[in-house]
Image (cartoon, rainbow, N blue to C red; front, side, top):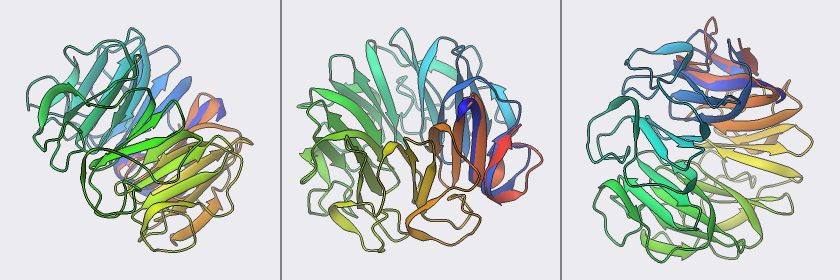
Length: 382
């Protein structure tokens, strides 16, 4: 939000809503003790916040060290990630975390069983380690078990899980250190889903590779792709987001397009039919930013309002219900938002004053202390 506060909703089994409880929230709750926040990221059951001073704070599930505090202890309120300063941006996978420093280096921590930390090992890391040999990085994206880095020169580098080619080197072998994605240049932004990857080129076209069981490549097929293919009929794109099996694109005109898995209505087209090519999200204009959870989607409008659609079994849409929504509905009680993030079944919002709000599933404490197992509307993380 414009006041810099952070709000969250949805699944909270591990405290990922940061409100001191493991209760779910169907509307946003404020994240406790967290101010001066500049940006957010959310993993499956953990949450991350980057403060304006370049420090990183984390809460929720910590079973693989994804909170970076040197322990495996679940945290219901934010703790500072150990020894990490000068951070410019964050990304979160299922159970691992990534940080890009202002100097262009990349740091990682948490689950590493298939090399998603990029440090050449498969051992979990409870505090951040530098990804070796990777400099000049401009942006990051974390999939469930793989990681992507965009260099300032427009090239893309990838590491971790690669069973369906989501690292795009033409193979399905996992990579423990970064490898360049061949044939992909002029890239401006990245997004990563469970096992698929997306790249936005500077010309506004979108390219995809990896798992395509539900059409998340957007090329009109369900064939996995080991090298990038262009998403059909999509131009003028400004930003991307990826859920477990679905993909979202924000066009420069403020409209949103979606494709892939749609059993929960996460494509927002009023149906539950999978889409092999992009369809426009119904009735949504003036959008400034997107986020995708496992099976739900979020949009921040230029007027500061938040909209949500898709799975709502744990209140992650923040509309006060647990009913799935195949078209966008407004998130209750939040205006003037500045940024948003989505985990597996919880959601986060940042106000311009640096405070954070959370809603949805909360059994890991991802909504913070003293909150129920889920919340249907936003509450502050205090």
